[in-house]
Amino acid sequence: MKVISPRLILLADLAGTFVFALEGALIAIQNHFDLLGVMVLAFTVALGGGVIRDVLIGAHPPNAIRDWRYAVVAFAAGMLVFFLYIPLSAFPNPLLITLDAAGLSLFAVSGTEKSIAYKIHPFIAVLMGTITGVGGGILRDIFLAQVPAIFRTDIYATAALIGATAMVLGQSFGLPRRVMALSGGVLCFTIRLLAVYYHWHLPTAF
Image 1: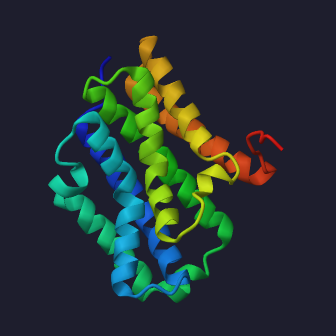
Image 2 (image 1 turned 90 degrees about the horizontal axis):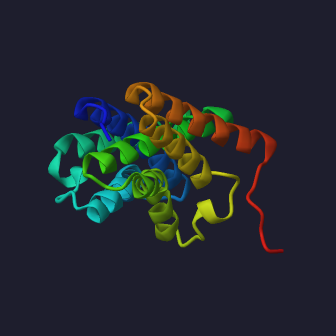
Image 3 (image 1 turned 180 degrees about the vertical axis):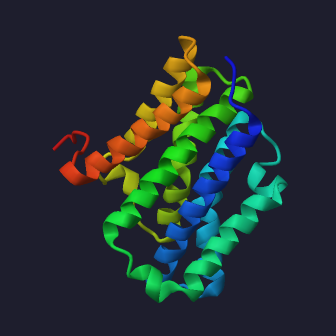
């Protein structure tokens, strides 16, 4: 299966890194972390999922370590939030949810594409894309001693899974890979926002 150019994957990765680093820094400040704690959580939320993906697919060392641009983007976002927390915290919650959905979509697409580039079977590549999108959030919640939000919140990881699956299926049928990457990202983004608006949840046992 053909893949999108490495430059486009990099751009999607860096955009997702910036968005998730902002979110991680905001949560760190809300939990009264100091400057170091803010930087650590921003880096973890932004790049944790990508590091897990790279380790699993054999991309050593992970991009977050090999390419300085990832760390710079994550730390820059963390510093931005640290020094501009008051105006940034005034942003309406729907905007923050929208940014989070955008980051999830970017990582789901870029993670799936990178996995395919490493000759990972498309089915597993979809799972790797999902891990890229949610891995940082899981590590964040572990650092905060909480049950990971993806296990108890409205549809989140499922949105990434559906978007990545649609992208891979379209590419397997010969549809333009850039078009399908965009379509998969938009689908993930849309499902996530609809899940928040309509309070969609996966079924539970009780």
